[in-house]
Amino acid sequence: MSLSLHTTILLILIQAHLGMSFTVIIPDSAQLEGPQPGSSMAKNGAKTDPQEQEAVYDIMRATGNSWATDIPDVCRGRWHGIECMPDRDNVYHVISLSFGALSDDTAFPTCDPTRSSISPSITKLPHLRTLFFYRCFSYNPQPIPSFLGRLGSDLQTLVLRENGHIGPIPYELGNLTRLKVLDLHKNNLNGSIPVSLGRISGLKSLVLSGNQLSGSIPNLTFPALSVLDLNQNHLSGSMPNTLLSCNSLLKIDLSHNRLSGPLPDINGLKELILVDLSYNSFTGPFSSSLKNLNFLQALILKDNPSVSATIPNNAFESLNNLIILELSNMNLQGQIPESLGRLPKLRVLHLDRNHLNGSIPSSFSKLNSLSELRLNNNRLFGSIPFSREIFWRMRRKLRLNDNLGLCYDAKSGLGDDIDTLFDAGIGHCDSQKSASTVPLQHISTVDEDIIGSSTKSAASLRKLSDLTQLIQLSAIFLFTFCLF
Image (cartoon, rainbow, N blue to C red; front, side):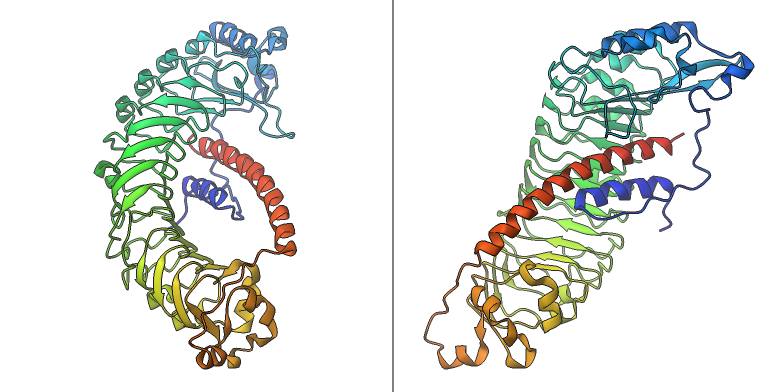
């Protein structure tokens, strides 16, 4: 699959979700069609449409930015956060407005959080393509205005992130039929997802995560949808089959909801890169095959304890690009398939807190990219198949404690790490044979070093969370950038 700019931006969002590093390459062809604010307008005498000028003044006053009313021509004012384009008569029209401090390095107009609002004059910008508000109304919670449904037919991106919006999602947003991106992440929205959104047939990214939405996911079909993110809500019911026909999907995140029913069969969504269905109440069995998901990099199904199934022998065998597989706390039974050890790019594998039995597959010794493995709290026994190099590479990220009787072979060279092995409840295989009647004690691995490490990790995670926020917001702008 050749990566278009659109796909590259979506990869940024996905990798930010995973805390992974990324590289952005923007081809020369991805240039804005219109000039940057204040470009050659002063030379040719072009001016902003007078009605739009007054509308921008109203909008700026409503966000606590009255300074803008002193600018004689808003499209020549040279401030970041506004973009304009000319028509055939050389009259400039506002096509983009952005508010909120993304970082210390951005210069978008900030909002007065105690009294800001969205002015109805926003509907007087008929050429508007992008509207972006970030952390603007946190101390003055207000519903999303229904009049946003009257924005012009050119609007392609509507982003209202972390604004503290309350109440339901306005039904009127379904009138924005040319919208490509709808992002209402991390507000306090409640009620159900309006079925009117189904009228936005060209939608490419739908992000409603971090709210209090309830009810079932409506039967919506978006042929061009690439990103579906509904995580951290109170949604219930099953995943509708209509979403399984959105063949352009790259990312599905339905985690941290109250969804139930069988695990969806995603094998037909061939473009998928990330799937996160964790922290729900889905039931088994697994799909018998995921062989069509050649681009899948992350499959996160953990904390669905109602699945209660065995892992099919060959379900994950052809996922040659899979990097993360998380199947923790799913009440899984039976043995670990050998095929899991034949995933060449696998870095993170979580199978902990299940009822898996038997031995660790010998194929795991060939997982040369593996950096984190959790097999703790199962019923595994027998020799661990890891070389000293693999063991040292994972160190504390290798969790094998609380099993029935895992042991190490003297030939593996792991004897030098006897303290770490003993802490994990792993003894010498010969010792276990000679004392098979003595139950193996599983000793906690929590000590002062780990506590210190955990404290540092928590601080690192907080920094990563802040960085991820900035990455995601930057990706949205790049995603919007490539639409024009």
